[in-house]
Amino acid sequence: MVRYFLLLLVVVLVSVGVCLQSSCGGEQEAASTEGAAGCGCNRLRRAASSAADSKEERPSSEPAAKYTAAANEKISQMMFIPGGEFLMGTDDPGIPQDGEAPQRPMYVDSFYMDVLEVTNQQFQSFIKATGYVTEAEKFGDSFVFEGILSESVKSQITQAVAAAPWWLPVKGANWNHPEGQDSNITDRLDHPVVHVSWADAVAFCSWANKRLPTEAEWEYACRGGLRDRLYPWGNKLNPKGRHYANLWQGDFPVHNSGEDGYVKTSPVMSFPANLFGLHDMVGNVWEWTSDWWTVHHTTDHQQNPTGPPSGKDKVKKGGSYMCHKSYCYRYRCAARSQNTPDSSASNLGFRCVSQEKQ
Image (tube, rainbow, N blue to C red):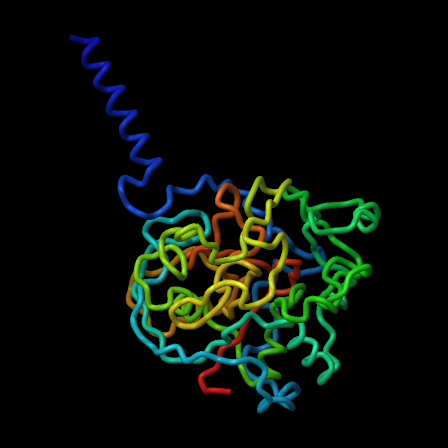
C-alpha cells in the first residue's frame, strides 16, 4: 500500500512538471529561466555618475527653448493613441525582481507617439541644427556589446563590466560611431540611434517640441489595445513561424544565429506594427521613458501616473536585439529595466510622444 501511494505521488509530481513546461493548454509561453544577471544592460553605470545623489539636477522633460528652433519641422510620423483604461504590469511576472507586478488599473489621456524609434538620420539632423554634444562624447566612451566589435577594437580594451563581461567600455563609441572610431552610421541612417543617454533623449525630444513617454504611456501604447498579452501582437513569439521583433536567436552571449535577419540593430519598420501602428515597441533597442525607477507599485487606480518624484535610475522599456528568453526575457510589454540617466550603450535608444500632432 505504501509503495502504491509513493508511485501515485511520483505520477502527480511528473504531471505537475509537464503542466508547467507546457503552460497547460494556454498559448502563453512557459515561465522564463531568467537569471538575476540578465543581459547586464542595467549594470552599465559610469564611475563618474553620482548615484548616491537621488535628487541630482537633470534636464526637464518639458520642451526647452534652446532646442525649439525646429519645433515645427516634421521629425517623424506620429500616431494618435486614444486615451483609455488598461491593466499595467502583470500578476505573472517573468522577472519578479524588476517590479513587473502587481497588475494594476490605469487610465492615460490621449497622446501622439512616434511610429518609429528615433533614427540615426533624425538624430543627425538634431546635432547639425543645434551643435548638441552627447554625454557619450563628453565622457569619451560608451558601452558596446563585444559580439559586434572588430578584433582591433577589442584588442585595445582591458576592462569589462563585472558579472556581464560581454559589455565593454569602448573609447570613441557614440551615436555617430556605434562600435568605436572604426565604425560609422553611413549605411544605417534608417537604424535607431544608440549611445544616447536619458538627458540626450530629453534634449532631442525638446528640440522637436515633444517629450519622452511616461512608463504608463509607453506600456499602454505597446499593448496596442490588447488585454493580458505578452507581446504587442499577442502571446506567441513567432505566430505562424514569422518574426515580429528583432531579438536574439541562438545561445546568448556566444552565438546569435540571426534567424530574424539581424544580429544587431535593424532598420526601423523591418517588422510588423502593432494595432496602434507602432513599430519596434519590443526588440531592436531599449527605449528611455521619463519615469524614475521603483519596484514598488500601488494597486490603486491611477490616472496619468508619472512615477516617483526622484530616484537614481530611469525606467527603460522594450528590450533589444540582445534579448533572449533564456537570459533576458524583457521583450514583453510588462517587462522593464533601468539605467542611470547618464548611461549609454549600443542597444539603448528612444522615441518621443506629444500631446499635440506635430
